[in-house]
Length: 336
Ligand code: NAD
Ligand code: WQD
Image 1 (spheres, helix red, strand yellow):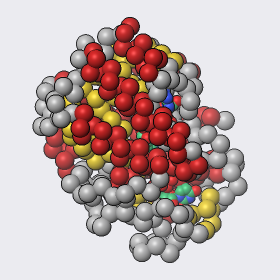
Image 2 (tube, protein in one colour):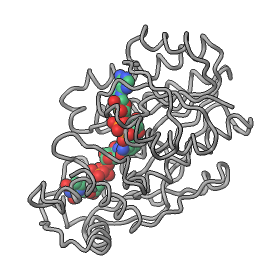
Image 3 (cartoon, helix red, strand yellow):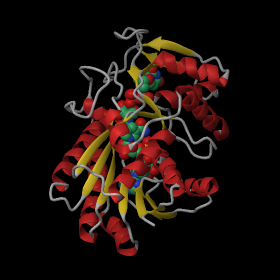
């Protein structure tokens, strides 16, 4: 049985991935400093799968804390979720974002080299594409200059991997997520935003739950069919499964190059108003929203060409938009 170190494994996407890894027979070690998650996620994972993952509280940006994990545990592969991820905050604290996100990745890679661990899956993002010239966008489209330090860290880790994987000692897969939303169907794990949410779905569910007064739709004068921005929203459980098949690909030696990139989305674009309509339908709650100014830095529209992931990983998103918004609502309801 292979053992995967899941950095950031108590976080939103990490916790869902741990569940899917365990259900496919992988052993999991979670390493997280709980900067943006809580330790009870480990209990919740155990409740879902019946298996308790090993949990190590460690700041992976610190060389010694990272190395200690490798000195004391056998590891066959790494999935690297650990990072700071708030776009706005990254503009206020760029140095902290570079220090944290880059140092974590470097520490993981240095220890892989030291211990002879071959396989690395990196959380990347569609943010590397900027504003696409056409949609759907595929992996061959050039990346664009980042618009935030956060986005820049995602690009920089991809660039680091480009050179680190050259010798072939380490093989890496960068999964470029589009917009992950939703929660596990048990409502035992989900997204826990800190303070006022920046992202659409938690803002919607918190407004519906009465925690926020009103959702502001950022702009309705975009050149899209209903004037609001379009994104490729993907259910976090589908996204989690993509990590399992990426890890399988590595252990079955199916990687076609030392560094591969895959878009992980559904291939469908939905507008902000589509999301609101889906949420209102599945929840039966009338959402209080208004139209406001455009948000600086928002791309107008982006959705994924997922042909490569389908062909190479044998992976395709299965869950519908209504399943995404309903699971997000169930998660919000159990939080109260
Ligand atoms: P999250 O904040 O829920 O999870 C990240 C986890 O990393 C947290 O549990 C946090 O405590 C941990 N962490 C941060 N710094 C650490 C450190 N120094 N040492 C140990 N642990 C540390 O975020 P998420 O939404 O689950 O995102 C996971 C990954 O996916 C991130 O790399 C993020 O950039 C990437 N990503 C997220 C999205 C999204 O919309 N959620 C989209 C694209 C890419
Ligand atoms: C979605 C749509 C908003 C809030 C961000 C990061 C990106 C990525 C995922 C990591 C947009 C609109 C939102 C609100 C709104 N993560 N909106 N009112 O901006 O596509 O992506 O998270 O790599 O890097 O930038 O996601 O959920 O913030 O916004 O109208 O209160 O909802 O304008 O069109 P985004 P989002």
